Every structure is written in structure tokens, then in C-alpha cells.
Length: 265
Figure 1 (tube, rainbow, N blue to C red):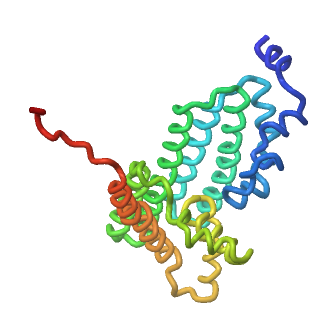
Figure 2: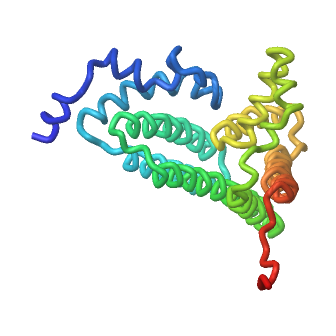
Figure 3: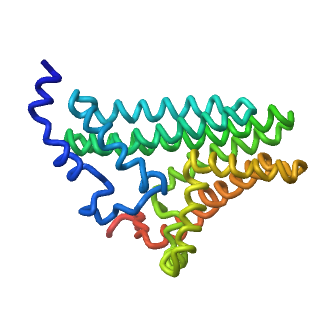
């Protein structure tokens, strides 16, 4: 009965795809987002979203699934093996597909809300933070050096701390000189997008890490995994902690400082 009810309310596939496709030509922001989402996942998410919408699946349910799948990938990544890295990438791509679907479902059901927005934001924080800590445990198991556990904790803290600085919503990649660089050429734009993806998207960093392992086939003495881990922690710490604190303190100067001036006489 429930399925039949939603079936009667469902628009045609063509109408659904036109209205809820983030990559639609009618959407001026269609090119915003990770490369894999722009090229494949958003279009691929449409039939998934359409099928789930027909049976009344909510956007928050899909977000929970997206979070659980990502956390499973991060947990398995702790095991030092190239196969767990492959699993991380595969589960990450599937989770990103669901991340596209939940927004489409929220708009279709008319359930977009502040709660859903913060729930999605919290999910990304948990995923990125737990990945950095899992990466630290993975390298620790290979080296038995507790320094990597500390660095993993610093990375996880930086992700959470940076998101709490709500005054500084813009990141390093939103700065004027970076935007100017994006407009200069396709090559510079591609390089910045790739770098941003590596820093902000777990699955894209996983792909980068997988490709970098090829260096070990030529130069086996280079500790690619350790260098990649330390590098990503340094970048995340500088971006999410140092840089955002600097921007936040600067923006605080623009906020009117209202203080009690004493009793009026």
C-alpha cells in the first residue's frame, strides 16, 4: 500500500532527472564538487534516487548508510595491506554515490532542513577524522612507532576543530589568488581541483596513495605510505587549525564589540 501510494505521486523518470540532477544544465553550480562526482556519480545517482524515492526512503536514512559504509572502509583500512586500501576506495566511491542520492531525496521529499544539513556535515567530519586516525594506527602497526598514533590524533582533532570555527567558513581554496589561478588555464584549474580532492576527499586520497605505491616498485627504499601520511597531517593541521584560526581572528575584528558601558546617570 505504501509503495503504491508513492508510485502514484512519482513524476516520470525524465521529470525526476531534470528536477533533481545536480549536474543538470539548468543548475549553474553543476561543475562544483569532486571530479568523480561531476563526471559519473551524480548522473549514476539519479536512477538510485528515483528507485529509493518510489518506496519512500528518506534522505537521512541514506546519509546513515553513507556514514556506516565509510566508517567500515576506514576501519578496514587499519589493516596494513594494499587490499584494504582497494576496499577503502571502492566503499568510498559507493558512499559518495549515496552522498549524492541523499540530497536528491531531500529535495524530492521536501525535507531539506537545518538538521539534515548539520547531520550531513557531521557525517563528513566523522569520516575524515576517523580516516586520519585509522591511517595513524595503520602506520603504527607497520612501524611500532607511537608518534604516528599522535599524528593521527592531531589530524582527527584538526578536522573537528576546523569545522567548529563557523566564522571562517571559507577554506584556503576559496581565497582570491587561488580563484584567480583557477581561471588562468585548464591545467592550473585541474591541478588545484586534484590537490583539493586529495586533501578533502578520503577516496581520492586513497587513489593517490594507490598510484604512489608504484614508486615503490622503482624505488623500494622510499617510504611512500609514511611520507603521504605525514604530509596529509601537516596540510590538514595547517589548513583546519592554523589557517582557520588566523582567518577567524581577522574576521572577529569586523564584528561589533558590544560591551556594558556602565549604568547611565
